Length: 177
Image (cartoon, rainbow, N blue to C red):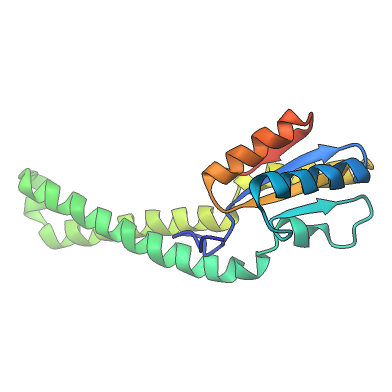
């Protein structure tokens, strides 16, 4: 694993799931994928119908969600405030009358709104809306009696290669961003 990504504090931000009609086929494909890409057993897991806690294999880093929440908000809030400050400086340099007439209020409002916008982006990163389709598709498949191979990629390249490999084997895939 390469280490946490700047905003999420997770080791694996990208995930790919492939749906198979039988547990045996899923296990074989998982093993082939592990060997073909030199992935660890923690990165490639098989989920079967009746699994007690499928969420642990789908999102194994859920314990990091609190850290992700804090750091995404702090980092993006600061970046937003800095962006607001840069907008203020640009408007001052452009001699915008509204900014020139009330510089302190303009500075305060632009920095504050930039920070608030950054905090809202931090909330979006924390929610991880890109994971919904992936999680729901796997849970739906498990409910229908199918099995799934889940890959926790540590890079975009690894995710793309795993997805290609699984689709080449005839599987339907669902992935995160």
